[in-house]
Length: 169
Image (cartoon, rainbow, N blue to C red):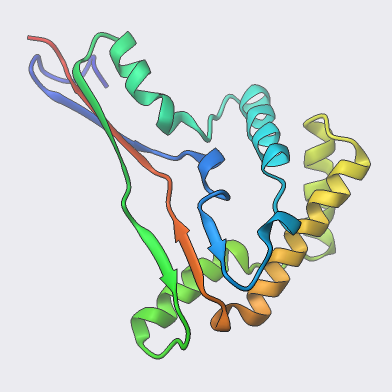
């Protein structure tokens, strides 16, 4: 981006921080410690980065990367979007928000998907047992939200980072 930006021009990027996604989920009616192993997820994201080259946590790293590449006046902001589902769901906007969240944490994990997840986790270096425990946790969270999410007080903050810096003149 720097190469194609004029001197004095602004470089901006918006990227994800997957390590922050699950810790920023709160469902009042659930004990998320039973459905979410943050250490497992963090190890999985890191293994994905090592094996694929895609970094799902690049957002939080961008200010340091931008600075290291010579940008000046580097800064960063986090997205302030927080999705709140507070029953009862009565409006079109509330319904659309519930549907959007349900696509993430209410999706069905069928046998084929579970097998794909298991193979992925094993390929990433997890044991068969660790993979099955994680899949069971995800299934419980997704199943519970899919069946009862309309009646659950759910708050989920996104974890996108906006980073910027200027090309020196």
